[in-house]
Length: 419
Image 1 (cartoon, one colour):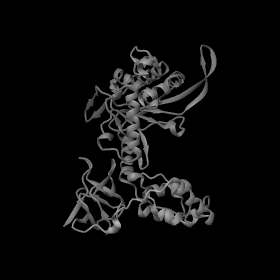
Image 2 (cartoon, one colour; image 1 turned 90 degrees about the horizontal axis):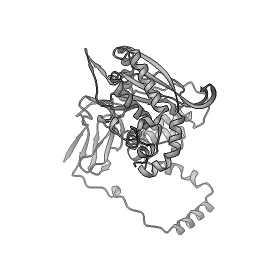
Image 3 (tube, rainbow, N blue to C red; image 1 turned 60 degrees about the horizontal axis):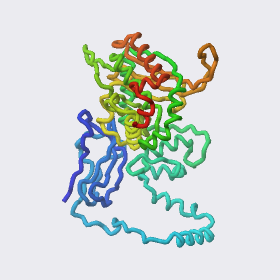
Image 4 (tube, rainbow, N blue to C red; image 1 turned 135 degrees about the horizontal axis):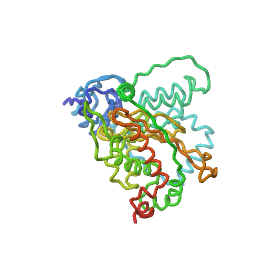
């Protein structure tokens, strides 16, 4: 029986997707639920799996092709017998001492075993066929590449990014000047990001206001409680939980910063769905922490980690990336000292965090050294006035410089350690 596999719609608003990577070849055997291909939509990356076991009779389309959802992309012969070569045999257990003896003997007889078996080792790794060709063509060591595909699979995009990062040419040498030009089709995600950023600049009245915050009080708290916090909750105590908490308090006091425009109406949100800008392997994504105002510091840290890991693995769902009411972006992790963040429509405000740098400041008439961070609030001036934007940013600054104000009158240990 021939079973047709179609690509489903990853979301209601998604009508077309791009074939990112074929994970199988024609003639190969697949078990039920084995991944067949990776697809990119304008919002997420996802896999299509085999609905039944069988032999792949036909794959329809090439990597990079854009197709409509519900299009047939593969045909599986479910009546074919499973070939003997598809049966995975578990290797017989070997005592560790025997392994060591065998390795020592092999190394003594073959001084360069790694070089001798280099091609075999590469072929045995979890690499897509196209990525494998690029790795061999450019002489890249696969250990230098982080796979972002299913189960850590090294994809074409991973290989291309490594080529750019390492600066290698087709001979595998670094630092050699080249005047070659390489064209690469933009992914749906990158095209969508580009459109949204241009739209944000053209369709909103964006202004940015700046302030600086003394991070010493927060850093002192983290230093005092971080070890016990991790023991209590199993998660690191980072800066993002403090910033998210401060932002939620300030948004409640200045609701216009948490609002959006819909035609001739302003939509105010009684909740704080905080979008966190994350640099993922295939572009910028902005997953959302739902009702962040209701979460504890450990709850915020756990949600940030969960979303960041899913972004890294290209596993974020459509729902996890839509519906935010305000965005926080941290350019400081890349060393940025100051920037003017671009709005994430239809939101009206975005807070930019930056690098923490020790600088001389004046306190009580004395020059002292403090770890300072510049903050930037970009906002839509159509619904947020200067008084609101500046007051919001000053409130965030004051909360961070007086972190006990984040704890609703409780002692820090009651909040940070769950007492």
